[in-house]
Length: 230
Ligand code: OGA
Ligand code: MN
Image (cartoon, rainbow, N blue to C red; front, side, top):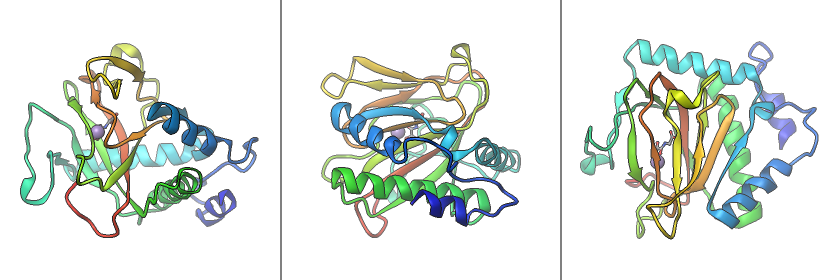
């Protein structure tokens, strides 16, 4: 699986999985264990993704941001879409997987999808992903990514693209206890190459106000074949 990712990435882009990574699929075992035991986990995947892929993704989202190609994000979809600035203030652009860096990233997401299905039998059929930019002061209040009963988003993944992010820059992802949504049980700084993974329906989470521009890719692994709202 890992061979395929590296092999299919154009050489000029030099993005993809680093084959010299010792431990083989250990990172997938760790993801599956984290999800099983706690419902969430965070992992540094900069070695797997390579600095040039992370840099390529960051320059893409920065260009989109500068050209105003990013749209204000809403809550819900289709007819239910609400742009409520008291809930979330980020701006997003959906990825199509067509540029070389997006294609490489999609192969990584696909390896996560297959790896989780093999280990946890989640029946993840596909994924969707968007870039997100939080400008100074932007936040996303506590929420879950999928509502019970609709259950189409099963696992959420967020990959961060920010070099040298400090605690004082704000913008941390706060993870709440799934049994008590007032108890913070994890904090993830949005540092380049770090990713957070959690069960979409179970884990309340929040993006604290960012004090500098914060770039990320959010991805949802879904159990439906065709798009349905959330
Ligand atoms: C989201 C989200 C978390 C983050 O986009 O639904 O919760 O850390 N993102 O960006
Ligand atoms: Mn979310």
